[in-house]
Structure formats: C-alpha cells, structure tokens
Length: 272
Image (tube, rainbow, N blue to C red; front, side):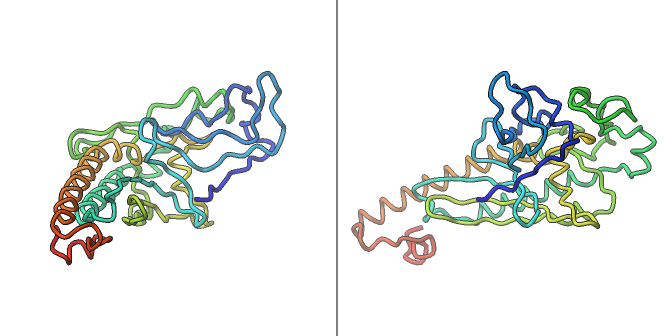
C-alpha cells in the first residue's frame, strides 16, 4: 500500500512545534498517526518548510486495524485477519459482519445538528476561544462537543461518545460509505471507505477522521471498531478452527494430495 502524504505550507502551525512532538497530537481517540517526515533529531530546531505526514493512522492495541487515505482520495478503514487456514474459511459470516459494520458507520453519520445550529453553538468542534488564531498550542484546548438527543448515537451495546457522531448536513457523507471483503494468501481484508468529496474535490472524510488545526477529529471509525472487532475476531478464530478440523478429517479419509486448496473446491468436495 502506497501511503499518501500531506506536505505543509510554511505558515502552518506544525512549524511551531518542539522536536519532541513527532506526531499529530489531536487525532481520534485510540488512533496513532504516523510520524512526521523528515525526522528532527533531539535538540534541533524545527525546519521552516518541507514537513510531511503520511496519511495513515493505526489503532492502538489493534495493529490489524488502520485508517488511511487512498490514492483515490477516499478515506479507508481496513481490518486484516490472518490464518494459515484462510483459503478454507467460509466468508459468508465475515460479509454479514461487514454489512453490520458499515451500517453502524452510517448510523453514526446521522447527527442532528445543521451548520446553522453549529454556528449558534459557537463552532463547538473547534479549538481554543472562538475567533482565536490557529496555533500548535491551541490544539491542547479542544472545545466541548455538544451532546445529542437520546437514541441518536446508541450502538449495539451502549451509547457511544458525542465525538463518534458526524452531523448529517447534506447527507453526502452518510450515503458514500462502501465496503468489501477480499481474500488474499493467508488472510482476508475487510475494507470500509467513504467516497465523499467537497464541491472543490477535497477529501473531507480524512479531515474529519484526522482533524485539522481548526477542527477536532470526530467520527465513527474507532468506535465501531471497538464495538464489533472482538466479535469479528472471535468468529474468524472459530472459522479457522472449523476449517482445521474439516481439513484434518478430509486428509485422514482421502490423503493429503487430493484435498482441495480453495474454499470453493473444499465445499464442493463435501468436506464442509
């Protein structure tokens, strides 16, 4: 996967940071952005131009999950699942989980506040005092994100934080969620991406997931993962165990060579 990058203009507040601050500090909770390039050695002053950031954030505690911006400009959440039995694991349940996952992403993309509401609230997704100049220091003073009406933001098990919700606005963001389940050599990848763009073509879903110097990161990505990932991983392990037992039984009955090497052949041969 080729990572896309941002290169920051000279007037960007990123050039105000100290050398110890190697990553974007205001991403979504639980997400770890990639380090800035080039690396600044200890005690060195910050360069005045040319700083870049790879557009990828990994989920803390879950290295199999990340959010990145693809070459298409789409913001993509990926979940990688591995097993030596991957060719034999049936994917129908994984596809069911993927449908549940993307519906949860859509459900949290229906917040009730209009642009007019947010203006009247004093732009609560910003930093610092409204009207103050964007700066690196100001990132440490996020404003309080408003609460939502009861029922707006419930997940499958419990209410999720206010920060998980994207307000509906035009409806483009909610309607542009897509998903896929792809098999590869020793695993599968679940992909969830949003194709929404502004009228000027800007990939604003990435701005939402990452945050900017003017807007706090917010949105459903890590919250849906926290809710559904344990179920997905448990089902994947069960599928691998079932495949292992079926494969062992087939090899015991027919020998190793005749046993099929794909899920389709495995099922067609009556081994599952």
